[in-house]
Every structure is written in structure tokens, then in C-alpha cells.
Length: 267
Image (cartoon, rainbow, N blue to C red):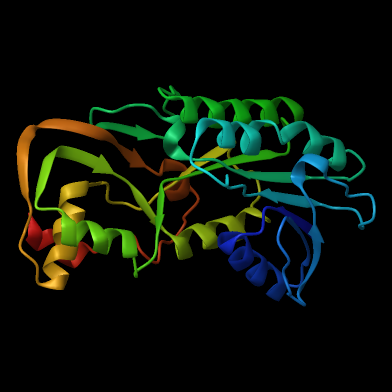
């Protein structure tokens, strides 16, 4: 099987490493130079993509990331890139396309529980653009497309959470957040290359939605800092995700919970 990665950041490289070890041939497209003997690298702009010089592609992973966190960057990266990528793929016998989107397409913001069968209702421009991307790809590759919606990706050494632990003394209210460890996301994406009878989409998150103030307090406990104070425990925002389809396929999480031993004692 020859696999193409469109977007070759850290997550893509980790997936490609495992697939290469399984004997797959890997081709990657990105704007930057990569010196990796395991892959055939094409240094190209996705808006001017040319795949005419490579051998036939069977499976495609699309993992794009905008340069900036603004509306125009999202539009350019996720939506404006669709037509040139589709045109470049027309000559290839693609059997599967794995499109990495985001749980941001779910706009609920009052602590609701959601799973893979919940209706998608974006509420901001970023969510709408991601959902538009999903829908456009679905129209073109209805039978080949698998949509993957990860929640917040983390590793054990989270500099961002450490910064929050040091600077947060008061949190305004209860805000639920959802996370997936990078290793679990990579393991799942690797499995998708061969998964028989996959679902149309997957929420990829761990088994423990948490109030963000509890996550910060867990890190404060680890660092020996004073615990933050929550101003209003009656106000609830955010959403709580259930990865129903992952459970049904028997996926085994390496990190089913986020710092569970600290969270349990920090509330």
C-alpha cells in the first residue's frame, strides 16, 4: 500500500513512522524540507499540488494546520485547498481518505454530553469552516472518506498547562474541556489505514471530560502551587464528549484519563 500525507507535521511524522515499519510506502507533501530516508518527500504548496510524478496512491491522510489562528488562514488552509488537492488526486486510485478535522464543529457550550451520533451545529466561523471542509470532501469522496475529529491534543509535558498553573489564581466558572493524548491519536490514525467497515466519522477523545479549572488545579498540585479559586460554580460552559465509535471498535487507550491521580484529589 502506498500512502500519501498531505501536511507533514509532528503528528503525521509519528503516523508515517509506524506505517513505514509495517512495510507501507510513504509519500509526504509539505512546504518545508524534510530529510527523512523513510519517505518520498514533495516540497510543494498544496494550492498548486502536482502528484503526476509519483506512483499510484491508495490511501491519503490529510492533516493540515494554518499558519495563523485567524479566519482567513482557516479559509485558505482548510477550504481553499480542496479543489487543487482533488484535482491532483484524480489520476490516483484512492481507496481511502482520512481527513483530520476537529471537535470544534460541535458548537454546544452549556456542558452538554455529545457523541459521534450527535448532530453537528457549529456556532463560530472556525467551526463553520471546518464543517464546510468536511462536507465538501464528503460530496467528492462519499465512499472513501473517514472524518476524524480530535479534541485537544496533549503530551505529558504540556508547557501551556504549566503556564496556566503559574498564572491562574481565579477561574471565572466551570468550563468543560476534552483531551486526547498524542500517542492515542496516532495509534488510532494508524489503525484507520486498514480498518474494515469504518464509520463515516470518529470523535477522538479520552474517557474523562474535565472542568478546565480541575485540570489546572491538578497541575498546580503537581508543582506545589497554591490552588486557584472558582468564582461561580453554578455557571457551566463547554461540552463533554463521548468517543462512542472508538469504544465500539474496541480501541484501547494508553491514556484514558488526563492526570487522573491528581484530578481526583484537587477538586
